[in-house]
Structure formats: structure tokens, C-alpha cells
Length: 563
Image (cartoon, helix red, strand yellow):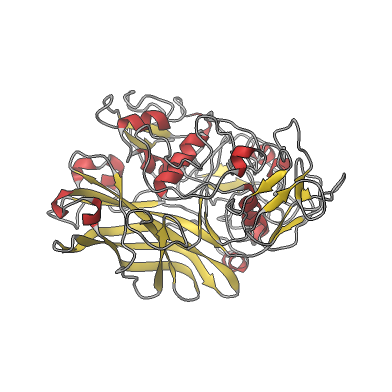
């Protein structure tokens, strides 16, 4: 994720130095950018001969432009670029940047910018797609605002993509503001991958723990069940139904017979998925727009603790380097957070683990981040679609489409840096992933996209990528999808976050599994500490586990239903 900041209404071209952390001062216009190689089917083969390290998404030159005081609107203007972008060339999906913004008034808390539904400027070669709160429903500034936009290529192409002078119209008057009220705005960008509409299979015909299967299954290898629409699905035994290999007494339970309503997202409809798990710098950016009270809820350490104290793990265990940089003042002044993996007195350095996947986050932490950024949790069915795509399933396959996996313990080069890489035991032939065997002495998650950025990478298999180019769906950190194994999970309707949290710091989307119990949420995909079997696409060993704690091997990502 990238973020640019602008403030001071007297000079919209400069940053407001009064509100910046040291990191922002040292690196104007842009912090927190991913360093990895985009991976998508044949695009991977095109990139495999190089040792590219970065998608390097950047937002720069943020400014407010074209203020119209009579109609109370202005344009949020910025440049954005990222490497190894793709669209077309025989590939039926693409990547994009999800762009959203936050503003604050002098002395006020951060609020979400609601963009207009028309009047935006997409530079040559790019297109803007609206991110309505409820995709597919007519725009309404009060009930269905534009909470972000997708920026993507307008024509076929691959490689570095840049858009200079993007303008998103903001009718600030509709949010009760005068132009003079606006003290600061931050623009954020997150890399996404488009997953097109289409039928796919759940279950593989293998023997994965708790796997989905077609309802006529009795024992042995499962029977893959195809998802052909977003219509209601009967859960139970019997031909044509959706069932599982365990329905009582285990975390992987399919639950009792029943049904999934048409409102439960099944993965047939198109959606955008975050290309990577939430990074540590991404979580820092999130924390730094919260109130003190909200920070209390979303961290494990009191924000008023001394500088250098770990925020999610007080002693920075298991490669989590998020620290308190500037202590907050109870109930009044929020803390300033920064990555500091090396534990020195300089925060936000290139070696401070900013792009390492963020562990030690709970279901409540993840869903608050998703609400704040306008995303939503994925479902179990969407998880399998994102991994497998429309291909026929292979028994016991991993997200990269084979049953082979690297078996040598990795050692890192440039540990914690923006170009952190695998120095030894990267497999040039088998699927690479961070799990108990390859973790070796690392003892924590890796930089997102690290497996694609290796000089020995030859494509989807060795990069550990899903069918559409989504990274680390197996291993690194557990994903947190919504289960179909209990009533709370089945009640999920796919509502999106609106960019706003409760004053407590919890998400305000009532239809999501609650942070209080996490009932309805589960785990898929395995982690750096788990056995390889957990990474299999259809393994459901903890698919219905309700856990509210922060755990060193748990992270997550979000998705959005496509426009």
C-alpha cells in the first residue's frame, strides 16, 4: 500500500510538516510500497528471466486542485505508478490500484473522503472504475457513496504503469465541509487483482481434511462440486448438494444440513482481491489515522507506552516490528506508529520490515482494517476460486496448481529490507511457500511477494501464486475467510466497509462476524509455522474455528465485489 499526504490549505503542493512522522519527512510523498513481482499466468513467464524486486506502488504529488467554492467541490489530484502491471495479452484478468482517501479538520479526527460519481479525470492510458459502497446499486451520496476508485490500464499492456495527474472529484460540501476546514488529506493505494465471473470447483477429488464435496459423497476421495451461479445452494447429503467430509465435532465442520442464501458471496460473481496480505506498514498507516481510544482497541500495548515498545507484540516477536514511535496521551492524543524491525532509534528505514506480512492481528483487527479501507472479508468459496480459478481441480493441490512443494529450509538475504529475498533453498521446480519446513530459523512471516521476486522463478508454480496472480494464498500467514460451517458464517451477505469505524475502533458493519466472538470466521491456507498439508486449497482443518486472540501466525487480506 502507498500513501501520500498533503495539507495546509495555503500550499496544496506541500506536506503539512506539523503532522508528519520522521518517516514521512524523510520520504516525502510516499511511504509503504510493496517490493515484489506481479504474477499472473503467462505474465509470470515473461518476467521470470529478470530479478525484479518490486511492484513499488507509489502515490506522489498529492494536491487539492480546482476548488469550486460555489458548488463546494475540489479535485483530489495525484500521480500513481506501479511495476509489473498487466492487462490483456491473452490473460482474462488484470491488476489495479484501489485508491481511497482520508481527511481531517484542524484538531479533528480522520474521516473518510466520499468521492463523487462523475467528473473524474483518468489520464491517457488509464481508466477509473467507481467503488460504490454497494456495487451494482445506483449512486446515492447519502446511502451509497463512492468510497474509493479502481485505477487500471485502459488498454492491453504489461510492465510499469504510470498515471500522472489523476483527478478524483470530491464534493466536500456534501460532507458538511467548507474548503477552509480541510487541514490535511491522505491518499492511499493498494494493489488489487481482478477475478472474473465464472464457474469453478470446490473440493479436488482428494483427501484433504474437511474438504468440500458434492453431496453424493460417502467416503474416500471427495467429489468436486462446481459453483455455477450466485444462486442459493443446498447444504446436505444428496446428489447436487454441497457437503463436506466432516460435519460434527471438528474445526473443519461443514455444519448441519441447511442452505446458503443467494446473498452469501459464492465466488461465481467477479471480485477484486488484495494481491498481498496486509503488510506491517499497511497496518501502521491504518493505526496512524485512528483516535487514541481506537488505537487502544487495535493494538496489544497501551498507546501511551514509551517509544520503542512493540504495538502488536510488546517485544516484537516473530518478525513483527511495529513500534510506538511517539507515545500518545491518554484519551486525547493518539500515538504515532512506525516500523522498526531492527530495533534502533531510527524508524521507517528500508530495513525495518515494512513489507513483511502483518502477523499478530486478530479477527477484530483485520476486519477493522477492511472496514477502514472499504473492503470486506472473503468467503471460503471465494478463497478456493482465488486459488484455483476456473481450472479443473487436481487432487490435493496447492494454490499454485500442483502437489509439489519446496522442502529445504530457506535463509534470507537482506532480511527486513524492501528487497528481502530467499538466499538459499528456493526451489526452481517445485512450489515455493513459507511453511514449517521452509521456515527454518526465520521464525516468522516473509515479505509479501518475496517468492515471485527470485531469480530462479519460472512461473506460477515456483512463485507460489494462485491462478489469477494473487500471492501467498498458501503459507506465510493464515487467511481469515467467512465460513459456511455455522449459522453466523452462513448469514454473511458480503456488505462492504464504509471507511468508518465505531468510536471503539471496531468495524461498524453489523452483518460481519463480530470481533467479540469471531463466530462465523475461520482459517484457510496455513502459515509459516504449520505443516504443508494445511496449505492445500481444499484443506479445511480450521475452517470454522472462532478465535479472537492475536496470534503470531495469523494475518489476512480483503476483497471487494467488482463494480
